[in-house]
Amino acid sequence: MQIRSNFLLLSLVFTALLTDSLISYSQVKDKQSLSLPLQNLWVTAQTVNIASLANGNYQLCSQPDPQDWRDGAGVCLNFSKVENRVDGYYGYPHSDHFICIRGIVNGNHIIGEALAISWGVNLLKNTPESAFTWDSEGRLTVSQGRVVSTTNDSEDAAKWILYRNASLDIQGFYQYSFPRMSPTSQLCDWELK
Image (cartoon, rainbow, N blue to C red; front, side):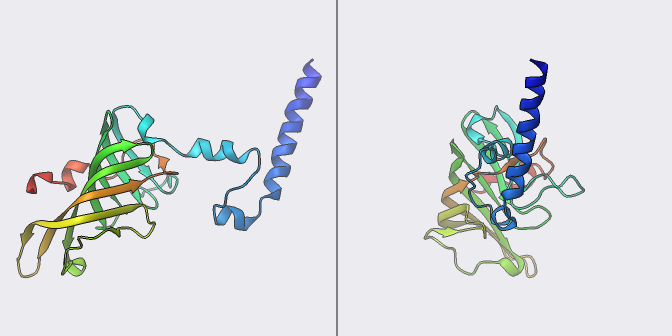
């Protein structure tokens, strides 16, 4: 029985190595769907379903934890979850490109509203009311924007824009072991409304 078990384990390792060698660089690079038996195990181990998370504070990013000094990789969602409600922000670590978001979780989607701060060279002249995609990844769509607060200092002009409709898809995001980005309370002031 021991020999059969060792042979089975050895054949499984051999199959995995053979399968791995059949995957071309372009398939992995482009993240195409592979119809290989071990591929689903690999994907399942990396992704998270936000609806199944317990109440708490989380950070999910579009790229795996870089395991270095950076707070995250790709675009990230830093948030707190209470039951089916999420309150956080979505953006690029180590940049000023982020947007506050809060809403209801539905699978790996968050449906709610968003609060953006527009300032400096990114100061919007017109507030978009129709739907548009906020990020280059195409995961966040916002609409029905209106300015809720402004400052008109000569060098530090800013607008706070509330988007009444926001839809964020975080399918395929990686869960980090703990939030490393700034807390939501430091960046998102929803009392401006």
